[in-house]
Each structure stands twice: as C-alpha cells, then as structure tokens.
Image 1 (spheres, rainbow, N blue to C red):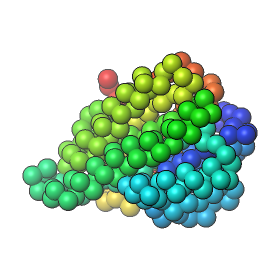
Image 2: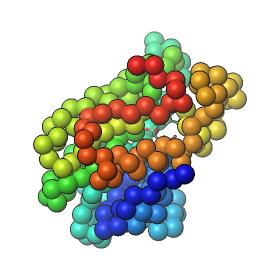
Image 3: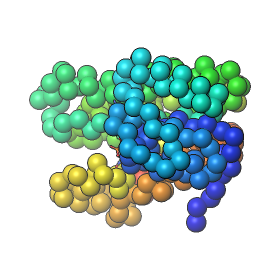
Length: 241
Ligand SMILES: NC(=O)c1ccc[n+]([C@@H]2O[C@H](COP(=O)([O-])OP(=O)(O)OC[C@H]3O[C@@H](n4cnc5c(N)ncnc54)[C@H](O)[C@@H]3O)[C@@H](O)[C@H]2O)c1
C-alpha cells in the first residue's frame, strides 16, 4: 500500500531525477500535487515534471536552475539529492587520482553545491525538507568502491551537520542509505555482481524504487517533524548498526 502525502502548493527539486530512485521520488511528488523539477545531466521527458539540464558539479548550472525554478513557481519546499556515480571498481591503489576526484566531485561536492544554492530559498519561506540519498556503503565500506563509499560517508556527515544546524527552524534535513535497489544502473552490472548483492541481502532480493520513494516521500512531508540529521537505512535487513 502506498501512503499518499499532500504536496499541493509545494515545489520539489530532485537531482538525478531523470532515472532510478530520483525519478521514482519525482513521480511520487507529482502524484501528491507538487510542482516538480528534475535536475539531471541527461534529462529525459517525464510527464508533469519539469526537466532542467544541470551538472551538479557546476556552480553556474545549479544557480541557473534555481533561478529557473523560482521564476516558475517562486519557491522551493523540497530538495532530494539523488545523483551518484559508482566509479571504477577495483583496489584503491589502482584508482587514479582523477577517478577519485570525479566520484568525490559528483557524489559529495555536488550535494554541497546544490544544498548551498537551494537553502537560501528555504530560509526565505521559513520551511523546507531536504533528503539526501547516500548508500549503505557509507556505513559498511564496499570492497573495490573506496571512493564511492567515502563520498557516501561524506554525504551522511554533511546531512548530520546540516540537520543540527537547521534543527531550530522548520527545515528538516535527513538521509536515506539504501542497499542495492533495482535501477537501470544496477541492472547494467555483471550478473555475478547482482547475484552477490542479492546474496548479501537477508531478504534475498533487491529493493525497489517504489520502496525508496515511499521513504523519501515521508521524509519530504510535513509528517517528518521530529527527525533532523538522521540516516534511514533501506537495506532489506542488511544494515546491522
Ligand atoms: N541503485 C542502487 O542500488 C543504489 C544503492 C545505494 C545508493 N544509491 C544511491 O542512490 C542515488 C541514485 O541512484 P540510482 O541508482 O537511482 O542512479 P541512476 O544512475 O539510476 O540515476 C542517477 C541520475 O543522476 C544523473 N547524473 C549523473 N551525474 C550527474 C551530474 N553530474 N549532475 C546531474 N545529474 C547527474 C544521471 O544522468 C541519472 O539520471 C545515488 O546517490 C546512488 O549512489 C543507489
């Protein structure tokens, strides 16, 4: 059963909103009556959702996208950050500096860029909900994915800090840390890698984007009122602390 929240009159921005978890979240906000904008490097048409081409690592792109949304609806109530590159798999000592820098720039600094640009709009209207999408890799560390795991841990720490900074306002900042979710990017992996993910799961399956959207929708709703800087695992029982 899907719980429906009333997002009418609200404006939601979802980075990485063209695909995967971000797309499912954008759809959920649209269904709840919000004006929704998907900011994505590679936008795809999505009925009822405004698509804006944005590279989250580029300050100018992000500033222009904020301007476009404000010109359209005058406000930003909800921000979901759902951009994440896995980067090359392999031992850390074989990871090139440029590869490390790219993963950190997109997955961690990209969150900082977007939050920094959107937050003044939430302060102006005196309310807001920010949901960052990190990964269970932040807590556990994934062998062969040190840059991804480190960037994700950075997103968790950023969320905890910002959640505390804003706790006395009506701006709530929380994080979702999923294990493997059934998205295009996961389906494109080697079958053995997918099997290993399923094998690690006590539920012996991948999560769905609908399950991710359910949690994100609650965290973005007014019903989420007493959580700040919290990290919510979405792991089918895999997370053990
Ligand atoms: N799918 C999973 O199994 C899984 C598990 C744990 C965490 N996550 C996290 O969830 C988030 C979303 O993952 P997903 O699987 O839905 O991803 P996805 O690859 O399906 O979608 C990500 C979107 O981000 C966009 N994007 C990439 N680089 C960008 C940039 N520089 N600027 C703007 N947009 C950019 C892509 O075009 C794509 O549309 C990521 O942070 C990921 O790390 C995913």
